[in-house]
Length: 96
Image: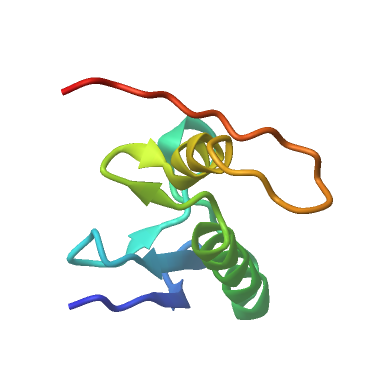
């Protein structure tokens, strides 16, 4: 299902920051340099990092069918004139 989760996981070396996204079936660690999981000294640091990454994911650019939503939105807004913004209406006529 579409579950999000950010948590800290204790290991022998320390704590890993873990996130689970709806696109993954299992939680994955936050990776550092070299593609290895980052190890934190305490649970709080790991949990803060996991929460920060989850927030960035949730507040990031929306994607639909491989394109960013902002590109489709700006193309649609270019067709209309909004009061007070002084944009012109672009009208294209086609014959069937």
